Image (cartoon, rainbow, N blue to C red; front, side):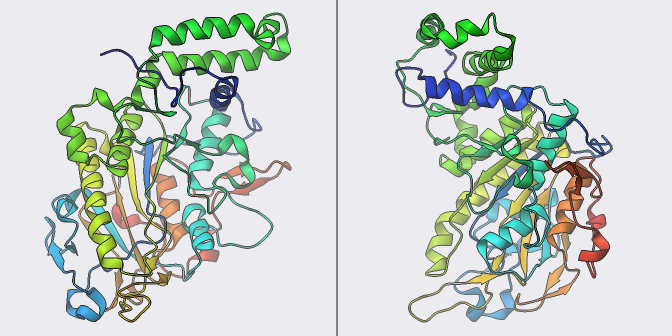
Length: 444
């Protein structure tokens, strides 16, 4: 199979595209302030995280916390099904995940009480409550900063990727700034020629790219000047890395055509399923943090027709990902984290204009975690008989994020440098934020 390039819908390599790819290379050669109070300890078992972000707020009753005895007033037309773990049920539209329940644990005690998309997403992604003078970075951005500061990530692919579009409701990097923002791939991974830049022209061969690279070098006065100007050496190095990503082996990780058709079909030939497959390939190549942004869960109206379309895709993609990671010996070193910013109201709204909808609900919701040293086959926390309140073992966002930090070998009490020169904790002091509960000690 011929190697594939990395350009999007193009017959030519523009200066804008080269500069964009140079910026990717700069992520790995630039550094934030060299001082870091602590570096990853290496004691955690996880080396990568795949976060499946269900933006909009998925319903907990129809996914990971069904209430079959509450009746149709709460469950609507859907029912619960048993899993391969005794006594654990999930929603009927997740039959493949039901067969994999021994590989993951369900966090049914998630809570924060916030019903705003932006503010709730900020809490779940950073572990901090909104307000104050700082915009805190997400877990993913903190990990990126630590790797850059320590110089411990040497890959050409950026250490923090989003498949395929960023959510856009919060600042992922917060005060850490541009160097710690994610690189969003764009494109559609269910297309045959998905790459980091999207879909490419089938006529643009690697040989033609090499010829155009040569031509660009001949006419680029800035590049020519860089050979004798030390000030331009970092830019030249970034450009070399960008070209290596375009024409070298690193870019092939995005070529899903290298996978067997049967495996691609198993994940599902849709953008989400193929994003899960791409995430597995990225983890295999050593990328530390991948977010799959699977949006569209804000179901205020007619939720059940929407779920019949979305949940089978979620089921197929996540179940295949867990099985694939486990079969390759990667699940133990990869945290898989599935969830959104909140849940949805347990009681179905049958009247117009909702016609069977559910609204924002931060009082109680569910997440799924697997791998990276987290034990599978468990349920942590419980809601009441209708799913309205957490009755046992509340889990706050800072508990979950702190536990993932620990799996990655980073202390939840660690700090990162603010641009003004002072240190900021990656999480608030636990004793000030968690009246009950705490880190997920039950799962390690």
